[in-house]
Length: 237
Ligand SMILES: Nc1ncnc2c1ncn2[C@@H]1O[C@H](COP(=O)(O)OP(=O)(O)OP(=O)(O)O)[C@@H](O)[C@H]1O
Ligand SMILES: [Mg+2]
Image 1 (tube, rainbow, N blue to C red):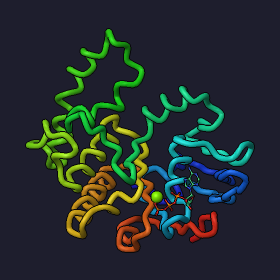
Image 2: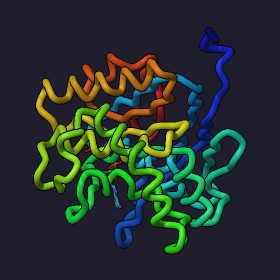
Image 3: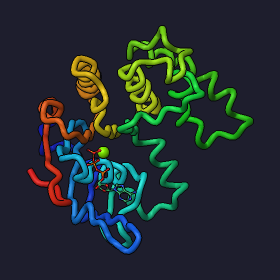
């Protein structure tokens, strides 16, 4: 068993700054965020609504870029924001799973198809059918483990909120990512459903999954190994 100090750092953020431009006004949301995420840890970032949690998580996962010449995110040894957009998308698909604040499931696809959607990147039309055939049994096993085995053919509007969130988690986990980023994963759920979702994260964490979660909810943060606070655009202990 490795101790915290011996664990390798898989994600490093240095001096991340993010400013949104609104007409003539600049809205500076992040102003110099430094962060190290260690392999296997469950880190929670706690902050008020509007403090910049989603913004930060999007930068950490390479979904958005920081201000020009201002900060960097390194995943293992790769500097995310020096990659071209398509290389960054490819890299993210391979290494990072993202559970979005508002699920972002595609309404016309069923549970299985929504789970597989991110794995389609990089496949030609020619190889796609074989890829899907190969993947389908693993996706069904994963969905069954998440308690969705009898909802496979449902579309998102035929699911409860907790079930939708579990599909979003399955989609994030299907590529077996080294890093799982979760944006307020219990924010839209009732208390008991939220607790069950947190138990799922606990199980993944017990299996060695590295998790960075953002939330405004102290009871969610209490489940993590380590908690940092996002305040005035910076991370503090
Ligand atoms: N694309 C954008 N353009 C302009 N302003 C934005 C944009 N996205 C977010 N903001 C603003 O930046 C601030 C931080 O937004 P963000 O979504 O990161 O907050 P949050 O901490 O995730 O909030 P919540 O807990 O409500 O989800 C907010 O004040 C928001 O209005
Ligand atoms: Mg948010």
